Length: 122
Length: 455
Image (cartoon, rainbow over all chains, first blue to last red; front, top):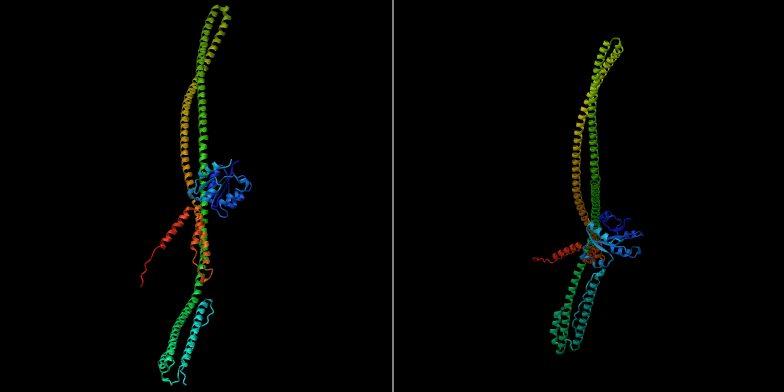
């Protein structure tokens, strides 16, 4: 059975391109449009990895990750954050989050697939 | 006793039009203070004059005064002072002192009068200013109201247009991304199918076709070989027929010999007379038999000849057929080889083209992937437009804050606060760069000094 990945981004084009790349790689993908919608998806189903943008309306990615880590079932789920800033320009508080990786937009689908392959839960 | 005329001065009054506005209180207070101060000075001056007169009058002996020299003006005091030495030296001194004091007080009163006039002028000026303010206040209020209306009506439209542009761009990019993605998937499926067909199915078909055709050729060769065997057997049959022909000719010869013998027997039987009659009958019968045998032999020979001819004809036909078959088999074999070779070439060419197409398709997929990646810029643009839209929506609030305390308590627009809030909302380095560059340009403009010529 293929593994499930949750993608959270308010940009439909980002969700579409990421979903396409991951489905081609054999993963099952579910989508959310912001942090609040993402929390609704954490309803007990098994999620092997979460990909989240930082800047979103309603609830940003940092807040979502903090809320998600409070739920025992998703406490150890790896998270990849998507940001528009390069590594040198990341705000200091970003590095203190529990994200496993930061990916700068725009990114190549192959980069995304490689990161997912490396970090996804067994 | 003639009493000297006391200089009387009428009290100075200041007519002030009463004001009801709160802003006139301070001015009115100042005026009232000045009036009070002036009144006190006047009282003091009068009291001093009276005291001086009283002191003077104690030492004055009644003398007739020259009334023509007496007037109600200040110089009259001097005239009085000039008249006084005729009365009493001590009184002169006292009177001079008091006259000087009175003169000083008169000077003071004159000064006060001037100052009061100045105050009155100031009051008039302030009244005029107040009138101007009263006229300007509604105009300013109207102007501020119009600016408020301007911002409240225009900024939502600006924000809506920005939002509309952002949404339309978002929709278009999503559509484009979807279409490109579908193209990539279709290319992938096409390549996969063609590669599978060429690498697996076509090779197998080619090999099995060669094998089957080789089997057909082998069968044809076998048939040809069998035909040749049959040809050989027919040749053998010809030999047999020759033998049969020889045998039939021998039969004819035997029959002829037998006939001769029978004839000789008949001749001998005739010689033998009656004893040879039986023998003559036998001889006749033998002669008949030999004749029949000869005829039969001839028939057999004839039939064998016919059979021989038929066999020869058949053999010729079979031989011809065999030659033709051999030639056809060779041709078929050659043609089949050529066809298979051509087919193999076609398959090889097809495979090469497919491989080349696969390479091109992969390149196209890669380029489309790059294009799709660059479409992600739309997300950055989305954020920038969202920040601008939100800042535009905030502008009327800042405008309202600047005049919320009334037209007489206008505050400057908190542009710095607005800019700081805008800068806080930024999520990208590019936004901060653009903001700082624009600010630097604006500050640079402020540093320009214009030298104005004064006429």
